[in-house]
Length: 315
Image (cartoon, rainbow, N blue to C red; front, top):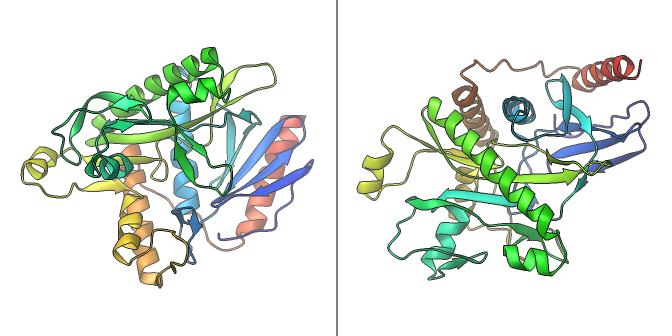
């Protein structure tokens, strides 16, 4: 599903994000509909990825349920393969990025000679994809203009009043706990959780909960454990399961979302290959075969499933 025109009972507002549509419902609920849209460098790419929405929705639900004993979350139910319903929370204006390895944005920054990332000092002598001495938290926030993420330090977050000191400490504690659990779950499946991001919000009663998706291919980076050290010793690229391969492909084509740059042609064959990578991650992480939902009558199926859930919930 690329785009839809759904309206649910009790809906008061609709926000269409880059990859998901957020339906604001009565009684403080949200319904997130995961589309097959794909974004990179804050740009929605002009080709949909089959089953991507279902993969991310079911993966997020899997990990939220697997971590609800250590961190409370927003999720109530997944009444449809591409829909999650839960409590509306006021988001904190920071994303809690945590890194166990020098990869992605951190590796690019490090290669430019920077040894201070979001106020965290990195040691000399690291190679790309090396493990860090210990996981580090490198938060980001949105720019005042535009939708680009900006690195920010813990100290600046607190001094600027973005998050209070006590609340930020809770976010750090939750971030570390989630990353530890995610690391353990990944290891059981032969994977390394390299880095990931978490978003948090506050319920009307003040409780802090994790919101959005966690540990998915869009929010996380994974390496394969098998052969990791041999590839690292040989200076080879790591075999990974994440959205980074999409960014790397676009960069190879000369696109990084900069002004004046044009998105390269993306074929249906390429979209199918991306879909397979998403499905591979799902099956690797859950140990279950992915069962794609039917692609016919999707809007009506979603409408019926969500309305059925709401009727039961409100009863």
